[in-house]
Image (tube, rainbow, N blue to C red; front, side):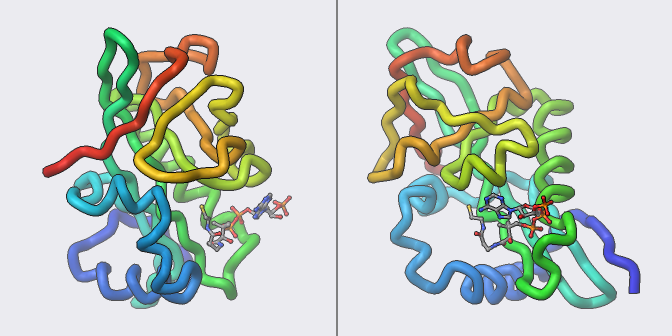
Length: 172
Ligand SMILES: CC(C)(COP(=O)(O)OP(=O)(O)OC[C@H]1O[C@@H](n2cnc3c(N)ncnc32)[C@H](O)[C@@H]1OP(=O)(O)O)[C@@H](O)C(=O)NCCC(=O)NCCS
């Protein structure tokens, strides 16, 4: 059966939760990335899934965040969670979902994209560590795993990012 990249629909939520439970466990809610998700829904129209018939095999979502520096405030995005069913890992689904989301974030000018994850994996779609710049998040994180992608502007390369900066959750 053909695999298909599709927009996330409202009735996908249960299957996505089951996938996230399976891959990250129920204790995922303690992670710092979830401080951006606690009081705010994911960005509408920026949820994408991989389907095979009726089965949901992979998902990516984006949350809004605020980038704040001394005299500066700008909207940005947090990529994730990205989840790919174990039996199709390594077949390109994760990369395809991320590329699709990043392309749309760029086209819509939604701002730069951040995530907490493995530089070895996310580097393939253009993410780079924010280090050596100083960035404050609403919880503990491993600094080498905080990654940046210029996506929808207004900064070009990492050099253009303010230092220090803070990423703050949005409440909606
Ligand atoms: C990590 C994950 C998102 C990758 O998605 P995927 O669809 O399997 O990845 P792709 O098929 O697009 O890419 C596979 C490539 O990435 C590489 N890769 C996968 N995880 C990697 C990692 N942590 N570090 C470096 N490379 C990695 C694979 O070796 C493979 O390399 P190749 O193309 O040279 O063979 C997926 O396996 C997953 O959901 N894992 C469990 C949950 C998780 O860890 N999510 C990310 C947390 S932030």
